[in-house]
Length: 248
Image (cartoon, rainbow, N blue to C red; front, side):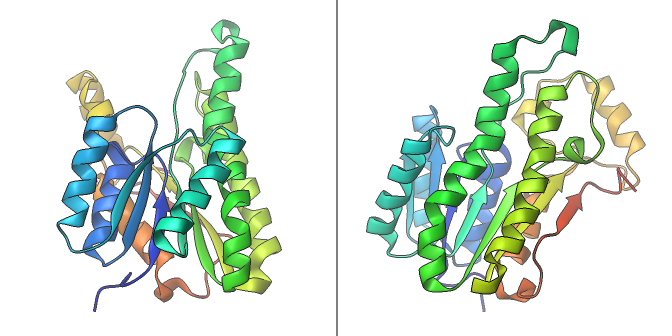
């Protein structure tokens, strides 16, 4: 029995990295997948084909989650194509790192909009459907940086900490309708973005992690499967750190 058989999921920011990993594992577990991308149309189309070949319904949508109107429009389109939405994974995110003294207002605002306001936009957009269904699972992607902070990432840390506060509030607001809201806080996850880093730096990070390795997109995806499935039916308002023991 596949854990997500017949469930319809929206995953934002899935044309690469963690989002792509989640989309693949969800399809393997029987979920139909609607996913968004901002600009990488080629990889998105490839992923759509790959997921469909697994025997599920899959569709890519170009959408900017930081736009309130686009988030509403996206959910309307997904409902037309998929009929219902059982799972929302808010994964879209960016970084614009700098020390505060060098950080521009634009770089602060952009990170807050893409990382945090998008969560408000998408949750508000799917809320009506989930309330009507009297059920749903919302999974928001934060970061260990949102839990402990990080020098040079004040904008990113603020956005990711804000996600935690927002999610806990949603757990309280929506729980009576059987809508669960949880947070995943990934640690050092090795994707194509980290592949561009200096190998020595990466080795140093791995050595500092109790499990002695970076995480994979699949590690995050597996945690998402649990929180999206009926196995976590009594879990809401929680922050699950998937970090190899980094913040232990």
